[in-house]
Image (cartoon, rainbow, N blue to C red; front, top):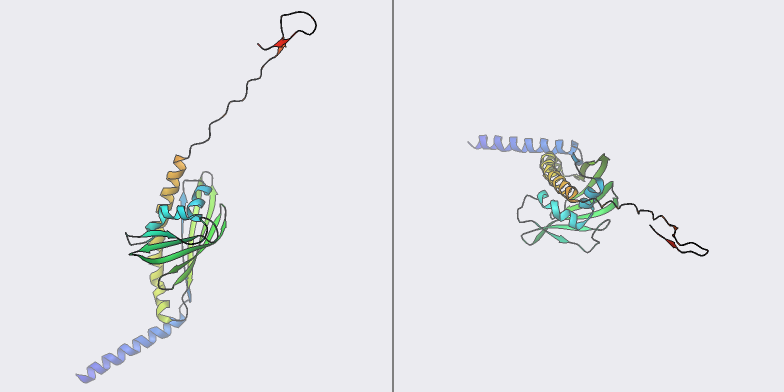
Length: 210
């Protein structure tokens, strides 16, 4: 009995060592990318990913916790330096900081999770007639920990599903806002007034309109 347990233990240790060794051979970084076409102009979509107020309209779907709320950081309300914090159960779960923004084509950001994991993300917007192609990409460094590198296989599925939910919500909000945008009224051109001499004769006679 003891020999069997010893054999099982030795086998488990051997498998663990093999997996750990293989982990060092796995990629040290990961990336996820999703693309969707939004039936809204690029400036409308850009505002939703470049401003704190924009993120609060759709960003909650990125979290799996229904009690998620938002808190704004000390930075500006839009553009580089803007901070968006996801809060759940009175704890900051993640902080997104916009690093650069090029209206209306791209937004780059860093995202730091509560466990210290840091990722870089980017929104790229390409106008297509009245629509916008939105590509959302993110990447991160896995370090040298072989266990973390094995977990990268889970990142693709988990992050991919979160991106799908997020892009669906982003598209719905952008299309809603685009449908509510009323074009400015067309102003009629001024009607020219014809000025002709009055019926009164004589020099210095006054002029009157029609």
